[in-house]
Length: 221
Length: 190
Image (cartoon, rainbow over all chains, first blue to last red; front, side, top):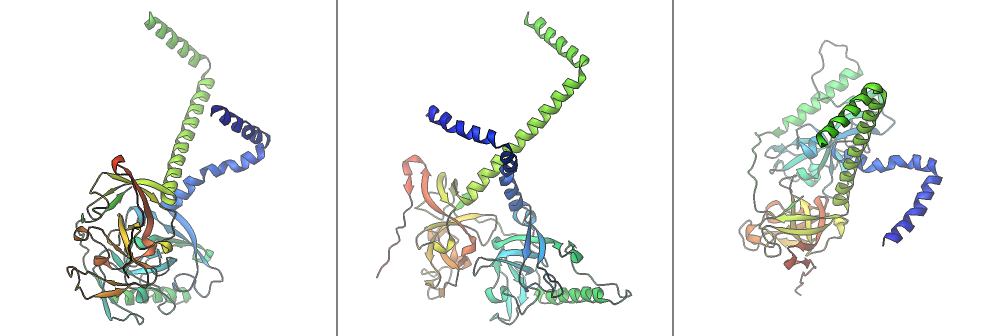
């Protein structure tokens, strides 16, 4: 056993001693696991495709796909879900990753948009209502209903590219009425109006934490 | 005797520090650097274990009454296979998934219905009228605990999206007297 081990180890050693450049080039790869776990638990950069979040993401004026920074820490570890957050979630109907905005949380009542059969929906506990900012090019809760919180993967916090929109994602606020009314002012105003319209369709309730139920066979990790 | 030896050694060491402080500084730097690197290697090894546990498989403890009599309430360890495609689960498989009610819990239930199946929500009529039937939508499964009386499952929260399924139970490995490979023993009645 020991002999086989040494006989295997020797050519391995001689190989790496002979190719020091290769060794130096490949050495950083041993830190790959740490890097992957960092992206799984903290931050990750992804590009957004599709027009369902227009005009917040991928606006028509931009020739590129948006490159954005997602925060997994506040979702996976802190479990902070708020109305108005843009999140990445696995689609319940084909498991692909979607980028949508949280409109309502568990317990809220939402006025739905056309594809949905009911006029109003009460969100069950542990679920959220997600919608795209562009209601007509979006496959969202209006087609598949409320989604469980466990499908939410990460939260969008920063736009990395294109450069003119580089910066954190801000919550929309009323633009200064005295400022000159240029295109950026109008964009800000439109974003504010969309947020108000979104909020007007939701009847919120104070969140109640339900006591943990013991009727599960839980896998303790 | 040994005390004077120790004192001697200390004196020699003190002299060495006094005579060539650079060498000592170098030594301290080297020790600090190598211990930092060692810590990083340990962190890296933990990350490797985490990735293995999350994407290949691991032995986990299961806990709770909902899977009686297949699994007892506590103290059992099971081997979990994470290299599965949720699209390929079969009726009768034991799967683990993130609870649709609480995202921080991973729970284990049995697959009863696949997309397209028509399922009677609760034949006993306790949680829903016994005449209520649902068609399972695309990419969803119907999950149910073996101990129906003490289980929160699809009868409560409806069909579960396959995106929530994380793994499949392969075998029970502890206690040794109850080692079992979980075979799919689903019976079809014609």
